[in-house]
Image (cartoon, rainbow, N blue to C red; front, side, top):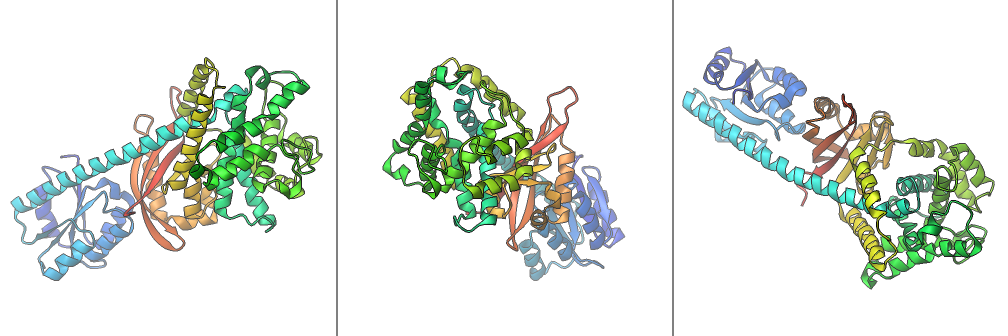
Length: 503
C-alpha cells in the first residue's frame, strides 16, 4: 500500500510527527497544520488521498469545518476520514459519524491501534469502490449496448433507401429545434416540453413503412413512373398499419399515438395537396407538420442516389418558395429563425466512431437479406417500441460532448429533468448550465478528464447539481472518446449521471 496517500491534519507539530513516524513506512504521508490549509489542499487534490486523519480542535478552521467541506463537495465518497482527538466525548463522536467520518482514534496514539484502524479503512474503502465501479460499469455497458442495437435497427430503412445513415438523427434534431421555436412564437398549439420531447422521439419512426417498399423502387436513380410512385406513397399507410398491429394496450401509449400521426400524415401538405388523406391546414396534426418540413429539409441537404445535396441556403429557399409543397407559414418562419442552429446540426460530426463502424458493418450483412417480410417489419417495430419504452421510463441522465462543435447533447428525459435543451452549444457560456455546477466540481471533473488516455478513458466521480435551487447528488461515469490514429487525440466524451439515494 506504499502508493496510498494519507493527509494528516493537526495543529500540533508533535502529534503530526508521531503519526508520520507510525505510517511513513507503509504510506505516502502529507501534512496540514490547520483546517484552512487542509481545505486548500483538498480543494485542489482531494482525489490523491485515500484517508484524511483529522484533528477536531484547530485554529482558523476546526475538524468539523473540514468534514463539512468534504461532504459538501462529495469528497467523502472517495476519501475516508478518521477523526483524531483527545476529546472522545459521546457528543463529538456522534457528530463526527453523522457528518460522514469513517472512524475515530483517541489520543494518546497507540501505534498498533493506528495501524489497524488505517489498514482496515483502506481495505474496506477499496472493496467498496471496486464493487461500485463494477456495478456502474455493468450499467454503463448495458446502456451502451442497448443504444447501439437500437441505432443499428433504426438505420435499416435508411440503408435500404441509400440514405446517409444520419437521416433519423437529423430529423429528430431539426424537429426539436422547430418545435421549440414554434412555442416561442405562438401559443396556438399548447406544446409542453414533454410534448416536444415526445414528438422528437417519435419522429424516428416516420419512414418505417419504407421497409415494405421493393428495393428497385426505393433505390431507383431515375424518376419513378406513376405506378411506382403510388407504391412509394404507400409507405405512409404501411408504417401506420405497423403501429395499429400492436396490442390495444400498446396503442394507448402516447408515443405510439404520436408516431401513428407522423407515419401516416408526414407527407400531407398545408394546401391539401399531399397524401394519403389530402388533409389541409391544421387538420394535419402539428407533430406530422413539423416532421414533414424537417424531413424535406434533410432530404434536400443530403446526397441521394437520384440527386446531389443542396446547400442550407438553397434548401431553405426552395422550401419557402413552395418548390417542395405547401407548409404552415408559421413553421416556415420558424425554419428561417433557426437557420444557424439547423446548419450546425447538419455539419456536426458524430463522436461515436466505433458505433458508426459497427452500423456500417451491419449494413453489409443486412444487404444480404430481404427486409420485406412481416417478421422483419415486426422486429423493427418491436425494437423501436422498446426504445421508446426505455426512453420513457429511464430516469438517468445520459450525455455526450463533442469537442469539435463544442456541443453538449442530453437525452430527452435528462434535458427535461435539469432544465436544459437537448443540445447545448458552448455550455460554459450558457447561463442555465453555469447555475447547475459549482466551480470546484467543474474544476475537479476537467482535471480528471485531462488525465484520461486512449487506453484508460474512464472517469468515475461524484458531483452535485443545483436543479430548481435544490441540491441533488449524482454518481457520474464518463468515457472519453479518442481518434483511432497513431497519436490519438480526445474528441469528446459520453457519460451517465446516476442519482444518489434514489429509490
